Length: 426
Ligand SMILES: [Zn+2]
Ligand SMILES: [Zn+2]
Image (cartoon, rainbow, N blue to C red; front, side, top):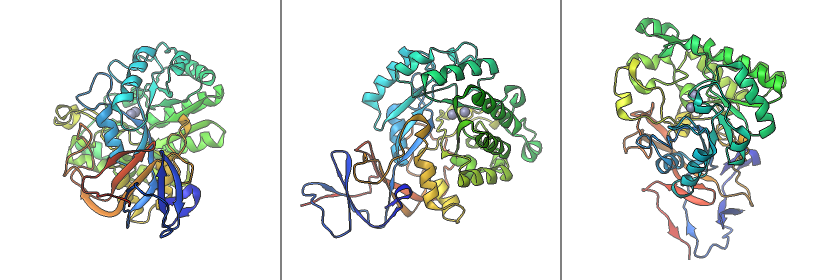
């Protein structure tokens, strides 16, 4: 069992009772568990389960890509016990009525807790603000127009004023549409060689600089989503040093892949922000290590096959990632010694904190949010299909090491590998 926040790194018998961690007993002590289900976890890592502050579950309106049942099953299969779903749906979640309906659906369809953000602007058009206070009262966990930036500084400034009153945080997709223009990949050597229109790193970093300045001016709280570039990490570091209330995320794909992958012309490597240079990737890793980047978020973005099985330039932007986040980062960053396991656990469990979701812990009295992972199991991504309804995973076909065997979310078993056996204590 490893829980970095509790300095726990030991072999224990963990007892879950009534949805809570009841006991962490010395092995062989034989806690009283008659009639309980026994999970033999020899050789497995037992970790606090992960929290993803940034997923797209496509509800309402695009259930052919993902719905709350497949989305939460995909999350649980990745060791996640809670996620936060974005609001760029169809229609977007810009009213209390739409928010209420997705929250109702989650009650019956989701297998792990889902927090829903509501839009910052009506129809995600970037002009008029939504009824932010009313949306908070209706249960919006935060606000975001993710998928799109809030381009108009005056609109964002007013949203920040409301956020300070209504609470929650404003999660920002940072991109200057004029600079990104019709780019389809990172602007650099590879885009030049391929003759493709590029999205420069400054498209992201200049907006981060602007929005951190606005957040500081309004004493509001922002979460900067999916950092992709060195210049962006530098802007966040500057903003934090100046006392801005800003937190930020990086994705597994930006931490492990570069624009070199785009040479394959495989649309599974097309997302926004795009995969950038090796120098950018190294800056993200350093930022994650030193805490400039607070957490890992997948930006799980399911797309139908017909949107991806087209020429690269025409393909939709976005990749799925819930089922492979831990394995990709464990294989590419922990096993080679780039990051310690404890740091990865911390950055994968704390992502809900800016949204008011406590990081899961392995300690008596805590809600049972637990991931069991086989750290030696090598598996080929996608070989047995996916729990997600979509299969635009950028690690598909790759062999990764480390596989989630079982996930307990909010006290309930939310996922178990079929091959993973259990017994009953007598
Ligand atoms: Zn985004
Ligand atoms: Zn997103």
